[in-house]
Amino acid sequence: MLTNLILILVVLSNLKLLASSRLGAAIRVVAAQGVALGLLPILAHREPLAAHALLLAAGTITLKGVVFPWLLLRAIREVHVAREVEPFVGYSASLGAGVLILGISFWMCTRLPMPASIASSWLAPVALFSIFVGLFLIAARKRAISQVLGFLVLENGVYTFGVGVTSRTPLIVEIGVLLDVFVAVFIMGITIFHIQREFDHTAAAPAGEGKD
Amino acid sequence: MKLLTLIPPAAAMLLAPLLFGVIHRTKAWFAGRQGRPLLQSYFDLWKLLHKGAVYSATTSWIFRAAPMTALAALLTASLLMPFGHVAAPLEFPADFLLFIGLLGLARFATVLAALDTGSSFEGMGASREVFFSALAEPVLLLALATLVRQAQAGGPGSLATVFQRLTTRVHWLHDGPILALVVSALLVVLLAENARIPVDDPQTHLELTMIHEVMVLDHSGPDLAFIVYGTALKLWLLAALVVGMVLPPVSAIWLNLLLATAGMGVTAVAVGVVESVMARLRLALVPQLLVGAGALAAAAFLLGLA
Image 1 (cartoon, one colour):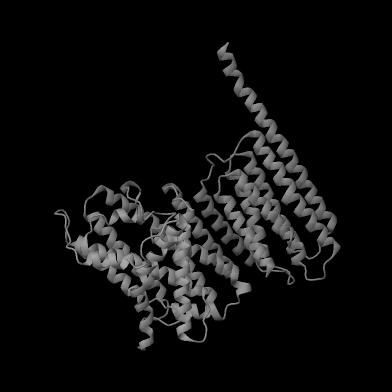
Image 2: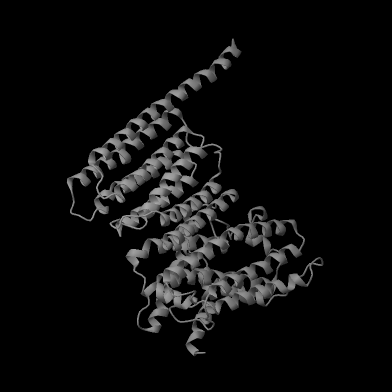
């Protein structure tokens, strides 16, 4: 039951990401999605609570719910961007594409052989949906922050698939993936800051020359 | 035909203008005003019915026929919508398609009349109305298709059987999220189709920004009464759709009816609250809202399939 609720929240937050232009709101949506997905390892497994699941949940929630949003919110504050400007694909069109992607994900999962022990029949389609939406966001948006968010959504999809579908992923693999993502977001946050600073510098120079 | 089946259309015809009263009182309460009497809409209709109609020389018979056509279509639609788990007089498999068609026919008549006047404002309003309803109608269809599927009526059931099964057989913990998505999509459709905030402001007096109101500027007297009454009926019917799928039945018929009426009141209050706390959306953003509602309905449909 609760698993289904979380999966619907993931679908809705993905649709919201496709439709919204405000970066601050988008970051918070991704954070909420991360927290919701953090609860998934506790709920998805039928066997009694293992320390492994609890540890994974705690790590995921801390990283995706607190650290990433903090890093990204700091990044948009530093570079003074509040919203996406003129994306390659408009917001209504993105939403339409999102619904299409959702349909394709469900269709694809009817073609995939699934293990019998899967927690919810929506798990695999929603995981695929997140992966595709992440790719779509990376391709369709211009702002670097939006693309980082797309990457995070993509990773959330992989994570959903890993936690829900395979019954026992080794803890070390999951923690490793989490660490990779952490490093990636960290580096991206710094890079965005530097791109912005460089850009400001080069943009300001001709104006200064004009005054002399 | 059982006598009991006359209750839903009678309730719609008698109580529909009251919804406007409830919405107005809610908005007045939010603004700290007393507000107009609850029955003011009835007084207005009574007054309009006793006035003469003025017809522009440029209009043709279409302009005179449209208000009656629209009202006739909506009255027929009210024969299809069950209320308080009392079946409607007309009931047959997939009757919701006729219901949507009748709403479309009423709109078509109003739009034709607006175009018939040759006024540029009315043409603009007609264009917007058609554009937004072209986006809202698929959402309504998709939402109803999802409901019918979730109800598992074994083929396209009538609205009454769909409501019956939805509220009794469906496991709310399991199907609840899907139905919540459908309800939110339907509420957006309700606001858009009835020209309420955030899509259109029924209180506005600037023709440039109006959608529904600007189309009926040239109607007067009884014609205007028909149109206003038709708007009230439409609001009632769409609200009855939402209330019907949410409220579970209880044993006594009168209690069912009472609960459903209370549900309609709650819906009207909700519309009033939305109008009090929200500003109207920019016209360019309205399609986005409707596409968003469509995305919700489509997601509900797809999740229901899996």
